[in-house]
Length: 62
Image (cartoon, rainbow, N blue to C red; front, side, top):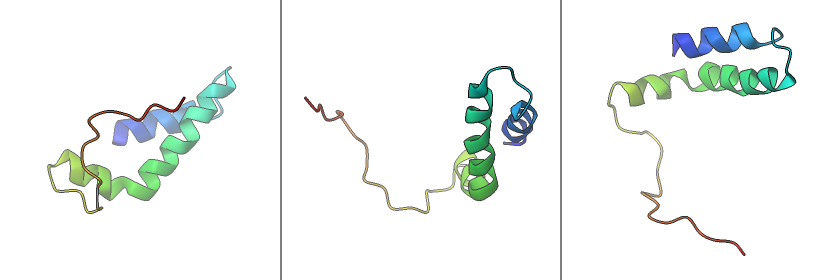
């Protein structure tokens, strides 16, 4: 998680392509706002949020 945060912060404003900033900004926000949840999942703790379960097949919209 520290590496993700470090890389994202160092990408922001330092890339020639604007997609670098576009990728860095939400990543920085995710780590800032949900760090504990990331750590819980990495350490094998159960998800604190209600989940809908596993999706066997994605719906097709035609």
